[in-house]
Image (cartoon, rainbow, N blue to C red; front, side):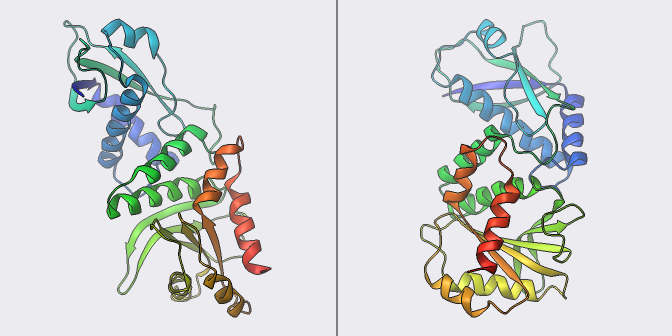
Length: 288
């Protein structure tokens, strides 16, 4: 492990963060620009360390090998360059990058690039999706497990035409809702009400009856503005849920069930439309 200084032009980072916020491409849309900038800096370190892990690096290796990195988020790429002694340091932060400690590389300059007109909005970038899934799989603490799955699902739901993620970890007077999605014009569920609620469970075991009952209560408590919800369980669902679904088959509200294995399946299909996965989940609920 080696500590590397990452240098950047603050205006470049700020403009990139504003683009993500304005386009709604950032997984947590309601965050201020400063938080998005911080997440971008962390993503830069992750991308760099994954690209060069375990290699004996010199400054010229960076310039010759990784001019344009894969997307950090949908429309953002990153270029790395070694920092020469004569270059001015604009903004800087340090991070432990997982490269060979014998490397003589101590400072890296990075520039973020906005790619306009290359990737349509609401289309997933499979590499981004893979990174989010890896974060869920590698999470250790309960907080990390919960946050990583919520971030993944916010990214997925923001990839559905007509869906807009408007809040995360919303605390009402008596409830907590993981993700709130606004159901806008052009969505696959236009017959449903204005809001869709999503609950995420990254447990070591499958979800049972109690979780879907709690989600149905949250849907019903939305003053008639919500008729659809999704329960996401990384470890799948217990059979007791099937009985509960049949018991509520006359209700006007619907809850789609999404497992971790279904989400991983998105990686096997190029340009997979997440809408298909959601529509199947609702179909299975309605015609169980």
